[in-house]
Image 1 (cartoon, one colour):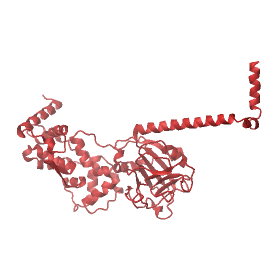
Image 2 (cartoon, rainbow, N blue to C red):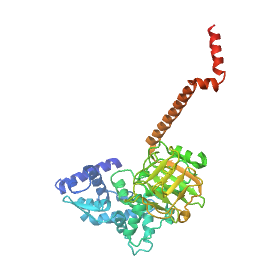
Image 3 (spheres, rainbow, N blue to C red):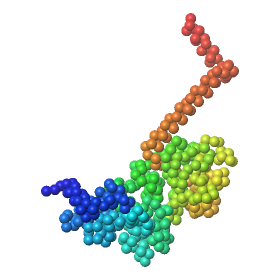
Image 4 (cartoon, one colour):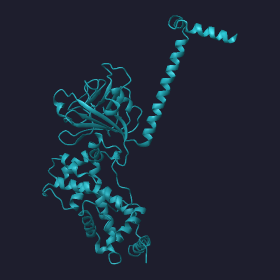
Length: 439
């Protein structure tokens, strides 16, 4: 009796014979987006799915299976079956997969675009604009694929009138979710690991409220273990302690700000900060809020569009170079979000700037914009490399401070006036001791 492993080896061998005999050794790799190694994997799946007379078809049932959505597997298989003529056309199978994964075919070296991933997925499941609550239905299917938390649906407000509108909305707000269907097919068919949510070993912090949303909003968070950099509830709510948590960490970070009205807002910082009283950062940086549902505000091109993040904890606060952490705006003119050196009294958020799209981040943004902060958290997303770099930075800073202290002390002791006038007879007594020991 054949083992499962030997059985699969037999199928691969049989498929290679089939391709050689029926396709005259056609080089499919020239007319498809898949490479030679991927074609070998796909030929095995082709046999499993469509050579039903020679195998136990139940072996295929887990290929496109989704735990919380039994509709997806048969829908995909039925679509592929319709493209495979007489259950023997491997070329048709490849073209169908190209449409599902890439949104286009490659025939004779020429490719043509079809539809976006959500539109393709909606066609597969026979969901159209006429379907009642199509937004929510599509969200449920997509969340099932990515094993997302269904409770986030309550905080998603697409206001879309068509599948294309819905796709455009989640492409901006939830890019991981928008592309999860082709990524799901790639992971199942080509043995690539699926995207995993970030991990957090602590469950009592504000980041937990935002993490499932941020995971879907930011591909850079997939599979990352978060590192706690600053917690105001434990480290103290002050700008200096916040800056100490930020400095030296050269990797992406998540900043959350909890306000007195329980609104949570914050930012994903795409690059390590530069503490130089200037703007820095990248287009990966964005603001988010849970005010009136979850929303993200991603940078816009144009005048002022490069003012991602301003950070100054070193230079004494002046009108031109204020001490604080800001997003957007044009410091010293108002920033979009500002955490001041006097973090309790002078921190604020406003509803517009030239870098991030307009919109209220909390209820007070329309009035004075002052934030009544309850807590602030910063979590590192750069992995072991960024954590090690920050530790090296801290060690270097500690050595620098210690060296400066020693230099200051030596200079002080070398000053004869200080010896005589400030230290009194301290050094005279030392001289008497040295003479006595010599005698």
